[in-house]
Image (tube, rainbow, N blue to C red):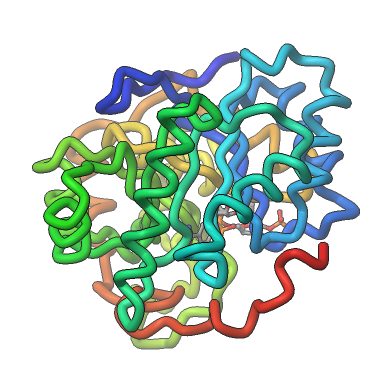
Length: 297
Ligand SMILES: NC(=O)c1ccc[n+]([C@@H]2O[C@H](COP(=O)([O-])OP(=O)(O)OC[C@H]3O[C@@H](n4cnc5c(N)ncnc54)[C@H](OP(=O)(O)O)[C@@H]3O)[C@@H](O)[C@H]2O)c1
């Protein structure tokens, strides 16, 4: 089985469905990555901040797959924006044991230091021009941040990776991405790892995977709730990077290319949006300031 592919605004092709490894312990990452590749995944999403880039590289090599058949994403951590960006990238490549990455992302905008954010993006564009990165993009950029980045650099990211699942559908940011030709990729695609507040759930279901609409569609299609939600992303033309450390779930999350949802089912799932994030707010999120020893991994 293979994932459908998306063509980004610079012509680079990217698999729509991949494996995320946020909170995957380094000791379990190589197995998760090689299991995913064995199941047909060709997109792996990591980050310097996940502290598992070395294990991602090990998993890729253990899979035996040719590097050119894989699409590898990693991310620059805000602590290394500004002058540290070139060093941060070289350290990621070194940990991964790769000569290039396919997609390099700014991990978060830093509203209080947006100049450093912009400077890092310019440095990433130079890495792209040198051929060490095929594509560059951003994460967690709200529309006004995309606008400012474009005004200051003249550059339009290929992709914006944002929190996105049936409980938080981000219509305004998706529309702003689409208007600029920026592709939307979903993190926390099946509901994520953060606990939701009670006011950010619908029908008392703490996770979209437990919502009666999703469980009834799962029953209808003979699929699991996670497969229905992943299919919802793909049927919207989005990219999703679900994470799991369990081989069975890694396989399950990729086994979604033999069915699709009806337009009215997609629209019904859209109505589950609570408008409330479970993860960090890009305008106030400062957790990145705690991770200061990114080089000590
Ligand atoms: N750019 C950013 O700022 C940002 C932020 C967060 C995440 N991300 C990326 O996006 C990826 C995905 O987001 P995420 O990891 O936060 O959330 P997610 O993929 O929506 O959810 C992961 C959670 O779902 C569980 N799970 C996986 N498959 C399942 C299944 N089939 N049935 C039931 N539960 C299942 C996992 O547990 P088990 O592992 O125990 O199976 C884990 O607890 C990350 O791994 C990372 O690569 C990016």
